[in-house]
Image 1 (cartoon, rainbow, N blue to C red):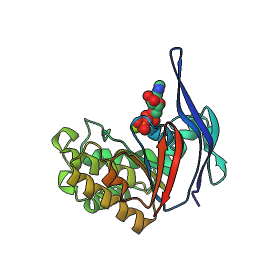
Image 2: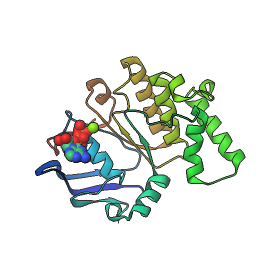
Image 3: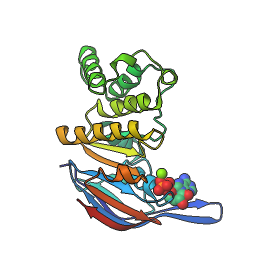
Image 4: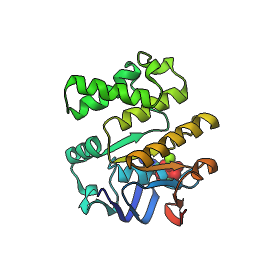
Length: 228
Ligand code: ADP
Ligand code: MG
């Protein structure tokens, strides 16, 4: 299951007296296990659309359904619960907690979920750190790691709770192209092996070329959908 339907979603931001239409009647279905990129120039609405799917924000018009359930009408509590249980978010700026080590940053996500024993949580964190090849940085704080290492920690943090959906907003934009490539390959592999749905945004042509489905956004509207 875990089918996402975006139905007639528009989003208008009020900037003083000026209205900015970030999304304009977007319609889109995303099925479980898809590896979809939201592509388009800066300002085209990519982040806004990810935020609607992640229920970080609500549409001005239209709705987002998960398996038929209107998640965009959720209360703040229900939205937080949905994010905690179903989604992992990866940000362009990594957004790790600066005072926590790599290990603690990843564990934090499991502690929020509050499932399983301490020993089971320890094992999950250890395993994902091995998978992402970051175990050697377990005791490092974010300022003691490179951008690529921090982003791998951030990905591990999103993945460790085995969410159904991973949302990633320009996850490689701050990385050099080789590191970005490796991160993308890792995401693709997780998608293939574990069937995790990935929805990420990018305006980088090379990154876009990895995706199986490309949603091109222009001025808050879907301009084209490319299936490969
Ligand atoms: P992208 O991620 O593709 O660069 P965004 O979704 O961030 O695009 O933004 C789409 C449009 O909405 C832009 O014109 C942007 O300036 C505007 N916008 C985004 N967030 C806000 C906000 N919180 N307040 C006002 N305008 C916003
Ligand atoms: Mg953006």
